[in-house]
Image (cartoon, rainbow over all chains, first blue to last red; front, top):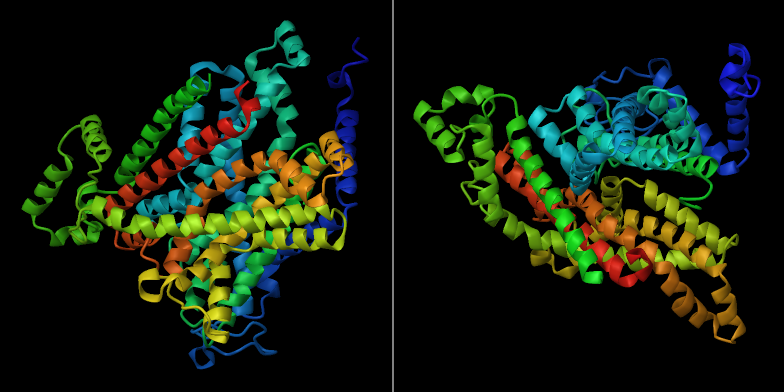
Length: 299
Length: 315
């Protein structure tokens, strides 16, 4: 009997096999050309975000009024803004801001959302009723409006932006995880866990949640782009990252004033945002098709 | 049977609408410091400029001297009657401000939805029918570009192209000043994203239906390709698309906020942004409540429509 159960295998063997499984899954994910493209762009963005201080030709806050509104040139690849700051350098640093907010928000939303969704789905009853009603309330208010309202009352700082963006992600994760938990908890192996006398905590975290991993990963990959877009919209509307910290949304908003005679100030950060969105949307689609081939988009 | 299901769904939407109201109320009390000072559009620095009597009057008027639960009850009672108070910044009634802003937004969203639905459904059908061919790749490319394009940036690109480079459309989106032509760019800016989502859903739904036996039977009967596609396949493939359209109607408001602001359209989005800039808390509270309730109701209507259109859901 003990030979047959996974958990009784030696520690190294067990983890070696799950790592090699993940590596195999990743290798298969990269077979499709679209997945290769999205992964390459995402890796490039990550590289830019991590090494922005070394790649950027100028410091992001270096002003030079005599060079204000210079068009793109060899010295300033994407031109300069009204204060003479190098747009290219600011776009590179903006990658850092966007990815940081995107990742932190999704992770916060995931941790709390998974916990709430798991409790709600597993225990059911009045807890589930209340959680689902609250989720429905937050889903009724468009994300950007909720975020705008929250940031406006809490003040536009990095923690309040992350908090405002996380609340909706928590509800999104909670809803998806609850659905998965509901289907997993009716499986025979969970009944077996009960029969073995395991406590609820061990069943939920040791057996139910590991089997809900696919939809969680899919949602996280889809939401990453979504959060970056919402943050940019918030910044564009003046309720996100504040100057002089570089953010694509703020840069587009500032450039809006000079749109007719210095369009590069808005167009380049927007182009970068667009590229990022394409990468994350393709990545989200690829991950969904890879982990859950039955449903979702076939784009 | 259908009426019972609809009635149950109606009952279920009451807690959601009450929840949205609670959320709007809580937002009004989240601002750090004194809610009365916040409601007057002032921050703590502006506090010293108010006379103490004035502050007391505002506190009484807003019911802030009462316990929180009583405040909530009073606020909810008034809000249900459409009384959101009077703005301390503009001195106008909040309900009136929302009432005047609402038609522009509703008109913009409905026009956008019609355009997005027509384009999305057409693109989805073209893509599904030409699966794996050039038409499919082009339609899918348009869809992925549409989903990935930030609405506010696309609005700026449209202005740059069609208001400056080729001056066909006005930069200002006000229909009163420029006529219906002013709606073209804002509509296009918001429609791109939902059109792409609808196209994706239409393509996958159509592909699923096209592989069914009934399509083969219809073709075998000698019906024209057009009839098979537009009557037999489309009718069966449209249901999931209807849901996406319904959900998108609710999500469109997010895009509309930025676009109304860019094109200076005097709608609910602009009102919300202005109220945030002016720190006009009561207007913001009212706008969030109206948007939230409007979308809870939209979702309810979509659900009911879905029940009517697809009898399988009722089972």
